[in-house]
Image 1: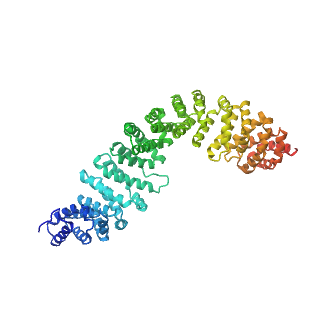
Image 2: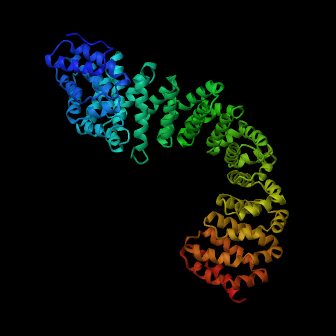
Image 3: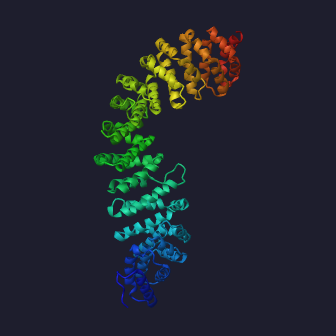
Length: 620
């Protein structure tokens, strides 16, 4: 019989195929080729495929591998359209297609076309997907994908591509199936797919499928604190990122790694795999080409990933490498970058490297603090970049924690550099500023005296002590007041504290939730009482110092440390030297709170002191 040309309409070709099938004609093969071309024409969307699919199913039972392969190819083309996909979603057809995949010696072209057909049928088609899963296809598909790893050349790559695409369509939207795939070892298989195809442009499609699947299953994985990305997978993902010239593949690699880099073990794997070094190289290479928002967002993600890896203690130490690490030196150089994202990344990196005293000392000796202060001087006003200001203060705060760094950084001009930042209204920046100042005055009498005598600063601190908008700022403001008093031991500082109304803030701080703040408040008040009780007595009484100490002893009594109790007793003894304050303490029923304290086992060595204090107060 005459074979219809490619220009003939699909119904004629389908009719011709039905006749050829019935006669078992040799024309079947060429008819299938023509049908593939015609099905690819979108003008055939309204054709009824019902009986045609039955003929194709019959052809799948022929012995010829070529006919089976071509029939499956036609099915895969039909299933690209919603109508065809629906007609192909029958239990008998799908079971037959899955059966071909079970044969470990199956012809590779048959496997390629069967995987394409099944993958297209279950695309956005829950009915087809469930029928395929009912045929226990998932483990069979993973075996096919595993076989594809040992197949070489174009056919092996094609099989990996269609099998991975089929797997992706099967897993989308079904977390239970994704979990089962994980249990069946899909991650190791995908890792091998990336090893084979991720570094070759010809394998981009299968690489893309693998990355999307990995992102799916890692997002939905229920593994507690564990990640599905082991050391080898992290290493391979970094290799793919370095080798790919595709922006899409690069973005998917970054998203996958970024999504998993919260895990501490993954951070270590990525640090050892050279991710940060690679990202630095890519960022510096492509920075001049970043001209649109999409490219800029990709650049930001890469910067974020570097910082995220550095937040891990072990990964940070690997990259610091005793101050000799390439990443550390690159981040120092980025402090001088003209690109704000790179510069902020450099500053954030400094804050993360400065997490041990040893690192902080080495970094200050290397001049890192001077570079940071230079940036502060350029960005210390309300119109400065908030992200940069926050990052700079965080890094400086860490650097001044070691006692030997404080004087150095102060001499480098810290106070003058940060002073204008008091005018910044943004609470997160204020929080970091107060923390930095508190750290740097610890043990630095001159600096504490200089700051504590600044009337405007202390007045601002008193205002922040009352803010309800940011508990962190409120806490840091209170603590800085206490630290200025404790570290300065200066009459001039106390003058300013009394003039600005700082005493009520410290009295309120006595009953703070945190023991460290309670203790700091007690010590600061004890210094005020020892040095300026006559001047402070009215403020202390007005602030109800007696009620605060009573509440402290009553509400926190059993949990109070010996140090806190001892400091409370010392303060009370000093307060009792003022008749006005002593009367106030008696009215506050302080003795009722003291008596139970003396009977507590951990306070037994203070019982005599407590009893004397109680007797003195009871006697009036």
